[in-house]
Image (cartoon, rainbow over all chains, first blue to last red; front, side, top):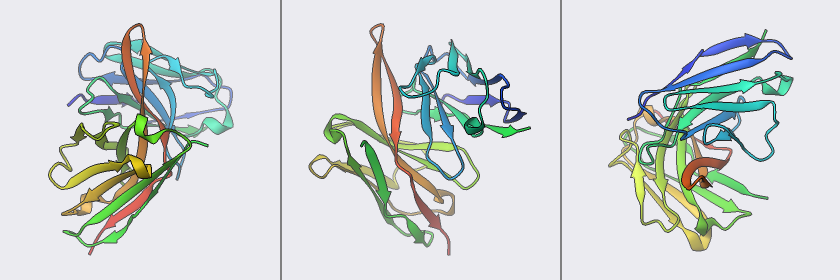
Length: 108
Length: 125
């Protein structure tokens, strides 16, 4: 299986900060990488697909980049509603899609 | 409104069985691939199973293969997960999620764009 490793596992930031989350794949996955946001007690929500394509309705402060094995999710100016856990997910292996361990973004 | 609503979760003893359902509305269910994804308490997301739009192609995670069975009834706009031989480690919130593919530069990129709110399965004696 393709292993997805996110870093950091948690971070503290203030409203207005620029936040960057990294996801690394154990093998090249081209651009087959998605990002999800999950708030406590809620279902995950798709933010970014194909590494850098913004899902409809998602604020433009969210952006994704990368290809191959290294990917980044950036929040350009953190808003109060962005405090959540973020997961990357590879879709390169359709038989075995796998998620990263998650990055919890907390209020500083 | 596009919606997925799971049901069927509950408390079951180890070795027992449970059948989860996912009711879809607001979109043409028969045109979409579907998935089950679970989340153990305080843990991350784990993909469980996939079924194609027609039901002809099915995949499972190794952790549930041989014990869980995914199926769908397109006439009833419903997805199912039959779970047998349940173990304590199957305790989780189970989400159904719609699979969608975007075509970019002739390549298909697959993602899960609609999720239900989840149903909780607890395996304990």
